[in-house]
Length: 432
Ligand code: PNW
Image (tube, helix red, strand yellow):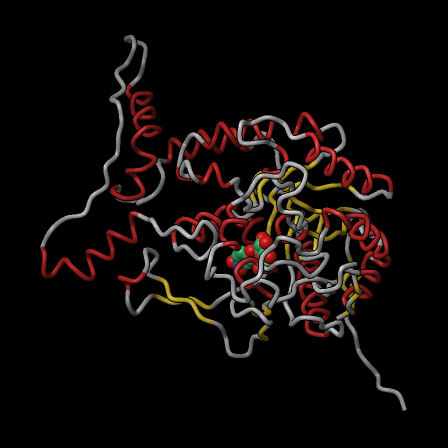
C-alpha cells in the first residue's frame, strides 16, 4: 500500500542564487593563532562565570581556521553557488593598526578555494567580534571607531576586492547595539541606554524624589558664512550636529531629523541591496504596562507556532512573505538577499525533520513573494555547520551539517536538510 501525497510545487527563477552562511567567531577557533588579537567574544567567553550557557568558548569551535576545506567541500557537495562568511577584524589588523599578513593569507585561501569550485564569496566585514582593545576605548559608543572601521574596510577592499564582489558591512546592527550596549545580553554586555536610566528614574524614583534626568548633548551653533547661505542650511547643520541626538528624544515626532535622513537616503540610494535576515515573527498589541518600553508594544507567540530549540525562534513562514512584501512596498522594491534563515535543534540531531519542514515552508513563502513581484535574488541558509551559538554556546545547533565538537577531526556530518537543499539547488523548486 502506498500513501498518496499531494504536494504543492513552488518554483524559483532560473538565475536564483543558493548558498549557506556562517560567521568567523562561531566557526573558526584558532583564537590566539598567527597574530590574531583578542576580540570581545574572547573576553566574554574567557571570564570567570561567563554568561555563556554551557560555559563554553569559541576557542576551537568547528576549527574552520584549519578545516576550511571541509566547509568548502560541504558547500560543493550541495551545489551551492554562494558562501556568506565573515572576516575576523582581529586577524587582519594588529593593535597598532598594522596589517597582519597571516590573517590575510587565511582569507585568501578561503576565497581562492571557493572560487576554484565556482562558489562566490559574500563577505561580512563585521559579525560581532570587535577587537577588545577597541572596546576598551568605548567600542561602538566611541565615534572614533568610525575611522578604525574605515581603515579595516580599506584593508579588506585592497586585499580581497579583486576577487570579492559582494560585501556586507554590518551583521544586524540592531542586535549587536541593543544586545551589546543596550540590554547587555551579548558581548561586551554593557547596559547603558540613556532611555533605560531615564525610565528607571521615572518609574522607580520619581514619585519619591521628584527630580529630573536629562542628557548632556554638545553642539556648536552654525552661523551662515555669508548672505547666500539660507536658513534651511543653518537648520540642516544644526540637525546634523544636535538634532541627530535631540530629535529622537525631544521632538514632536520623536524621530531622527528628516533633513538628515533625506540627505543620507540620497547617498544610500547610490547602490546596494538589502541583506535581510529572517527567522521568526511575533504577535503584537498595545502594552498593558506602557512604561516598560519606548514602543509601548507587547509581543508574544501564537501557541500554534512550532518551537525550535531556541526560546526566541518559532516557525512563522507567512511572516517571511509579509516581510518581503512590506519591504517591496516601503522601499521601492529593492533587490533583496536573504542572508540568514534557519532553525535550531539539539546537539547531534541529524534526522532534522523540524528544520526540513521549516526550510520547505519558508522557501515556499519566499517563492510566493517572488511571484508577487519581490526582487529576491539569493538565499543563504543559516548555517552551513553547527557552530558556537553565542550566549547559548553549543547547546543550540543551527547547522545543516552536524559537528561533534569533541571529535578532533570535526567531520561535517550531513543532516537530512542537506538532501533537501541539494534537491532545491538542482531543481529550483521546493515541494510542500
Ligand atoms: C543571528 N531575530 O542573530 C546571528 O546573525 C547569527 O550569528 C546567529 O547565530 C543566528 O542569528 C542564530 O541565533 C539573530 O530578531 C538576531 O529574530 C535577531 C533575530 C534572529 C537572529
